[in-house]
Image 1 (cartoon, rainbow, N blue to C red):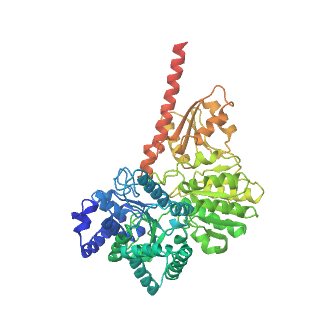
Image 2: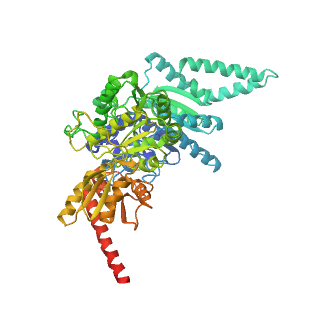
Image 3: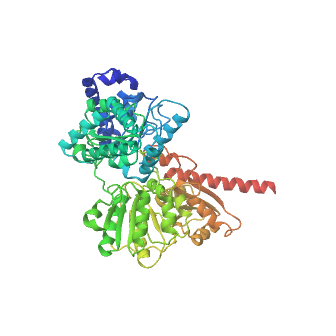
Length: 640
């Protein structure tokens, strides 16, 4: 295999074009073999193999810098930069990340995981190089989807203004372009990017300026003529308007074209956009046929492309939400649904089919999604923003300023709240409780199971329909529920009212969301040790049911709060703040959750166990709290 000869990026520079094409086939096989076992982002990674090879062939890493937007298409880059032996550990506990990571390699210049950040980072790095008098090239690779994010355009605007030497490569795997126009455009881009043409353009400009009085006007006329020709032949007018030199579109699977064009533009001292057309899932028919399905996948059968996991017998939380949304929308024409380019992941695909006029995919533009929802809410609609916890972070100001401050009834269906598993720290939903609960008037719920999620959604719709003008957020975990039956006619839940699931006299365990069932199981284990525990399903992180909690803690004297989120400013903190001034003496309290850490990648259950959020961890923490109480009591008697 040619790949075994590649120890570092510079090793591919000695390969012939034929060998590079063979290497591309070898890399595709390794990616398919690995992702079929570990899961991961397949279609986007297969679509960018040749482009990655061309970049490593033309540029000198890590001297030159490549930044991958989002980063889940960087698998070929990882294989070429000293990680092919460890590639089989992709996304596993202790293995290599599914995204670029500074700690992994000097060739990973910038960590990514959320979209639309690459151009900003590239511009910052290029500016740093200028300030340090370093002669290096910086390349940002951004997908057509990520280009819908507002930050990408902010960065393009700034880069064009300050004229730093960055190269922005648009990996376009959606645009359809006719073969004739594409071939002509490719030809023009290669010819217009040659050193001779660049030098000739500069000399002509100098010549035209030499004419007294009319020189500047002649230059403007020449530039307009050039722009008109390029605008007719290529879709680059937008980028030219931002002071970028535009080249493309060219095929992203022709190594000869890619290498020639990249070599030509490498030395151009200006901000450049290179438009590359690729095919998602290239080289693997099931992924080419259904790229959305193979965007992010679990383990699958390589031969058939079908999932290796059996069909789920239990509803996932996402499916439960989806069905509740559709059922409510059938009864209430005011309900509209909004997603930021995640229709399938958030469970809105079926809603989109049934209610196409009431479904809005705004692209990767979370800030716009939230304010768009706010606008709809001002005219009596009930907007449901279905979004992953980690992506809602990007619209925090809009939640505060455009929704909460104006007291608008927008429903946030926050999927992937808590630990999400193999995607790692960029995608773990650790912070939503902390960043939402401090917003005045917001209602924040978390269900113990999939049926309670359905009830909470009905509750939210009922509150919005009957006059409560506040944002309502429902936070639920990734994955399957518990297989409980779903109520045919779900009853609303009283706002701010907790639920006592078990009563005991020794300790109160107050759990929120996904930690409730594990807490119940822990209480059963405690019972076997002769410890009786009260277990309360908080249901609400805001408002807190102070009365129910205080009443229980007054009996037990000990409180253990449990949450699948960051402790700082989280649910447990809210409980402590709520009880302050209510209970005297103050009880012994332990808050269980994620303590000041970014959560690593790995199977969800293993990660939960690591942070004591499994039944066993809650059981052991409760025992420690009881022991601590006894120790304090003994110390108090000795002091007397």
